[in-house]
Image 1: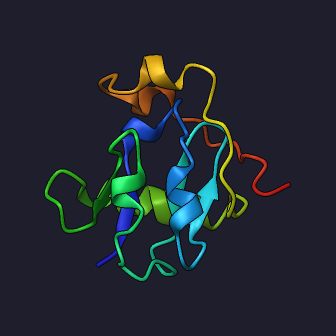
Image 2: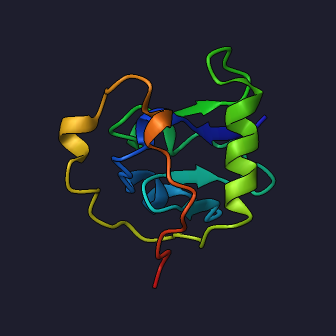
Length: 113
């Protein structure tokens, strides 16, 4: 099992989860975070820290293989992030917006730069 970040992170990109991750398995895109499934140790400490409730175990029926694949693919492309940053400007207003995958950007974030 691993944890994956799902669509409610898109356009929010809260990083509270990053701060508590003991293995630094989060990667930053332009408008969301992903978890590298091969690095995640399944501890789950990130889940209650996510203000967007966007992190789920890959065994959760609402997750599906597509989110696991997206997390894996982009974790291999995006920079690692290990420190908390401010969320995106409209994060509070967009938190909970349905069907946010349409806003997904494949562009990388800055990581810890």
